[in-house]
Amino acid sequence: MSESDPIHKSDFIRDIIAEDLASGVHATTITRFPPEPNGYLHIGHAKSICLNFGIAEENSKTGAKCHLRFDDTNPEKEESEYVESIKRDVRWLGFDWGDDLYFASNYFGFFHECALHLIKAGKAYVENESAEEMRIKRGNLTTHGTHSAYRDRSVEENLALFEKMRRGEFKEGECVLRAKIDMASPNMNMRDPVLYRIMHTPHHNTGDAWCIYPMYDFAHPLEDALEHITHSLCTLEFENHRPLYDWFIENCPVPSKPRQIEFARLNLTYTVMSKRKLLQLVQEGHVDGWDDPRLPTISGLRRRGYPAAAIRDFCKRIGITKFNGTTDVALLEFEVRDYLNRSAPRRMAVLDPVKVVLENWLDEPLAKALVSNHPQNPDMGEREVAMSGAVWIEREDFMEDPPKKFYRLGPGRCVRLRGGHIIRCVSYDKDADDQVSLIRAEIIPGTVGVDAPEGIECRAAIHWVDVADGVDAEVRLYDRLFGVEDPDAAEGGFLTVLNPHSLKKITAKVEPLLLAAEAGFVCQFERVGYFVADEVEHQPGQRAVFNRSVALKDSWGKQAGR
Ligand code: ATP
Ligand code: MG
Image 1 (cartoon, protein in one colour):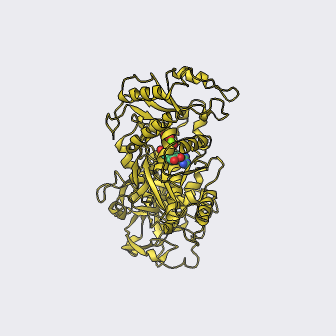
Image 2 (spheres, rainbow, N blue to C red; image 1 turned 90 degrees about the vertical axis):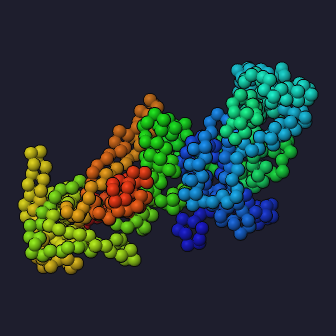
């Protein structure tokens, strides 16, 4: 982050780390991003990625690093498709884990050692009570828990039973290993939590080497400690797990003591972020896969044409705090628009075309119009756009009976075709449905590249596509996937508030340059919005397919003076 960065901000976590480095508590900082490979990453993960990898980057002079660690201790849920997608997304966001790629499943031996260590110290026991009995005996926030009948088993008996668990001599659910901490603790997490459970399920990495698997709460702090993570950054819901994590760190033979710091997770309006819900949307076909541009997944946002830099800017702008809240998705759209406004070249496309015949075309032929690629950035140059005697314009740029402040085309009125002549509407036809079907206009000679001559009122320039030269493109107009701000709170469940109009496919007329564009090319369709050539279906030279990234905020008022 440079000093000139307009949204450069520090936060309480960066402050703590800076202090630790300054005071010598640590010589450097090692953070980690620890996804469970059971789904695709979403914009919430991007917040965590930008924080963890960002801190490593900012402190690189001290040798700081950020690990990418797959938290793959649960054998039932992980898939290699997810591992690959997560790597791709982290890289695409602009971050690099270097050699520091880890899989928690490689630490199964270490977790087991730690469990044995706790048993030998009299701090863990094999529990034979059922899950239901355990639940009842745990008590609640107002009553203490009660001790299990098996809590005072001898170390020898516990070691023997745990070994039998490991060898697969018990059925799933027959027993578990529990920590022996404090059944009267006001913190429920400290009431003898389960450390290990039996699962006769092979693991994608370790095969059937294990039939006992560590619980998340036990494994996670040990993973951090084993990797010498200095600052373990997680979301607020883990705040009251911290005493338990600290207890594991204190009582297990670990090589380092990570410090956990919690921050607020990202929630966004008009979307859902839980992996379970995203999976359901994908599996039940409410969207077209994990990379559907309507999803808040990183791959969906990429396919929608959101630049990685805009997502990073968004994460910087929302900052890191301790307060849970919901961020307006409009802020993300703002960052995308802001970034693309500066960087995206302009092109012309007509989404709702109506034909304009230029009746006196032959009197003043202009084979090519010169159109600027970015009006605020002359460095992006100009391009030639072929023009013949007929053009498509946007239906809404013509009004039969326009009010005074409408500066575009109407009977007898003038408008400029971007980069070309001023034209005046002479007459128009309507079809059986009372829709304008054809407009006839005359070009005003000598008006290319010069101001409107005396007596001609022309205050706006509109985009157009040449009828002879233009090509068809499939354009997908994406809108929010949900019709309400908080789909998670919908009475009938989030699926009942899906927005039925979240995708509209139309055929537009576009410049031939857009057919030639590479997949992933992002531009502004002038006066319409920002669009990206679809990663999957756009085929240069064959088939033009564009996705709307974000609409332009445009109104009549802004047209004036163009
Ligand atoms: P689940 O645990 O339900 O599978 P998760 O969102 O916690 O889902 P993980 O793969 O465990 O998924 O997340 C990896 C990291 O991303 C965690 O460190 C987590 O804190 C962080 N993270 C997840 N969701 C958000 C969010 N909405 N905002 C900020 N960080 C998040
Ligand atoms: Mg999680």
